[in-house]
Length: 258
Image: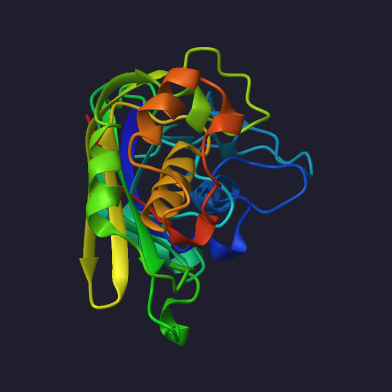
């Protein structure tokens, strides 16, 4: 039994997120079904698919990106019994996968490697298009919000998020996660050519956490909230105290750290 580590890039626009869903097509499902013809039927990592067929492998992703969220460096792991070279696996998968999902790397991982449980950190980037007219080529990858913003205020508020905090105020509703303490190594706000980017690196993220941080920073930049209110929101540990949830389209998982 081998463990393969896959690095993936995808446009999440057409998908119901990473994780398999009962009522929507997920990226995990598409990749598993592309890999299935290469796997040993009925092996330890095989299970029945929705039609009851054997041989669909179970792939673990480092992060469960939401519907509409993209990735440049998602990482997944899978146990297989075949002996195809990693380069052959990459080529075969990219032949079978749709054009909006690409396998950018495949390597043999150490025994027992798990993409989710062994991840030590992730980096996300959020893009806000601020020009009056949005480029049609960016429409699926940005949040078009053409309003003036105080970048200095956004940066000062973002700095208050860095460090170890209870981010319960920035957790989407409807999640069963009980531990809400996370550590952010950085939360950078930049502007270039009519676009604001917020890049966040941390040891882990709650559901919608980056999108809520971005939505809150946007409101601070627009003068709806003060810079000092960020500290109060963190202290409140109450979702209703924080800002809006920015749209999924502007968010991309850049990389996973091990």
